[in-house]
Length: 310
Image (cartoon, rainbow, N blue to C red; front, side, top):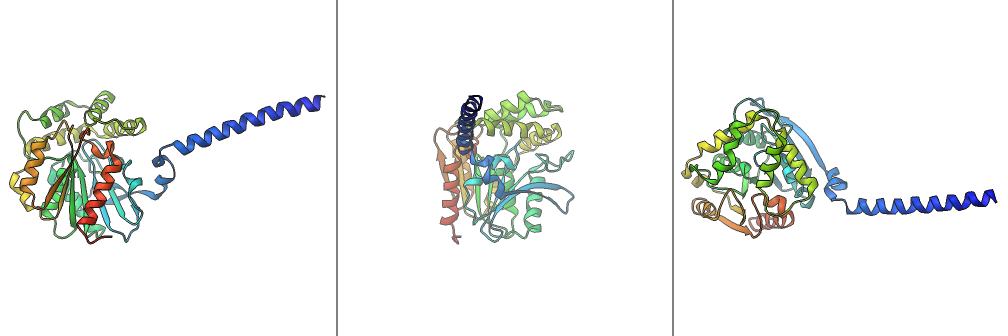
């Protein structure tokens, strides 16, 4: 009798653990793929540039495939593209770079003009012998990408500007409203600032795990970088510089963008030859966060339509 009672208890426990195991399996299957197997194909690396700056970057895909280089916005890192990287085909070679002053890249005390950032990217392209690349830049990264394209001597075939503007400065603009708090920041960066800053760029909801990750990345950026970014944005760039961009250019813009507006897109279209615009309804400034599937589809379609095809 004792033996049979033990067996009944063991059978009950076995059933309980089986149910628990099945539930865990379902949770695993429903977990965002970027948390599991898809991350295994992304490698995080560092490179020391000839100017002494060390940059952190992520790379994935076929080393011999068509190249895509991605640049993030202010307060972000290469993790800004965490929802996009798993969607890109493995036959592409994709680099997502963390700009100086951000993430695990070097944090110099100064050197945060758009020209400084662009110089780093041009050196990166040189040192890795990258040619015929599609350069993608979001927000701050889009202004860096503009500078790179203006100065480029053969690295780029295409340019994608995400949540961008003409780069000129107008007092009292939406950019001023966003950047005016930068000058007052001190270390450590307050969680409330990082949270509110990142939230201000979003209109369509994003997953909680992703939002908290990007809040953490904004906190990682030191006050000196935020100060430099504010000064750089206030300085602006001559509108005529946009006419130096000669590669086919795609503008991706969210209609609910609170920083850059439709008239900013029209200025870009007027001054960049071979430029086209895709507007995303019900989408904010960080459209690759909010609409990663559509963003990836539009990016790949642009690459294919401006050959040679991969």
